[in-house]
Length: 75
Image 1: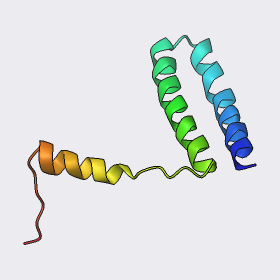
Image 2: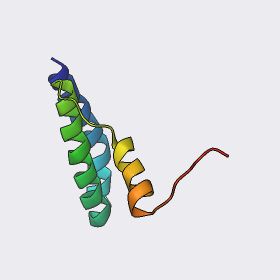
Image 3: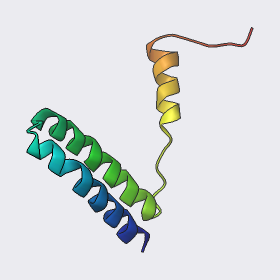
């Protein structure tokens, strides 16, 4: 039931956004929108199915700490 609601919500969002972009021939915007839309749709369906999605905060912390060598310590 939750998956069906997610699908209906995403169809509604796409029905509102996509025709305007296609009509005004904003193909780059539509391509980027489609990629992000499909990623978020996949995550939404996964969450609705009960799949535990990892938090992006840990990846961001690793990026700052290990890759950029930044550390924020309270003074």
